[in-house]
Image (tube, rainbow, N blue to C red; front, side):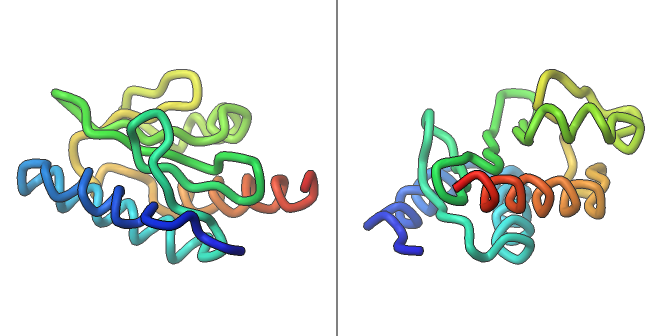
Length: 122
């Protein structure tokens, strides 16, 4: 899959202007997504780093004032709601303050399932 020109540079710029602790969290998220779904195209969508397989967005994340938001497939988030414990979970959005608070195995599973669904649809 061909990446959009400059898309990773735009994500680099977005992450680089954050304060250090947020920069670390977003770099960890970025690496998690890239390692889990290496075929995903990285770009900026709605002013936040996002990852697409084909025409489907698999995930996105954003640094908010008080937390980080991770956007995943809402159906998969609902199926795995109990895995997120005390984290604030909304419609397709998981809000957290520390990367270590995320259930990494669950996030990876959701990413893989969403990417697989996207491949079938494209």
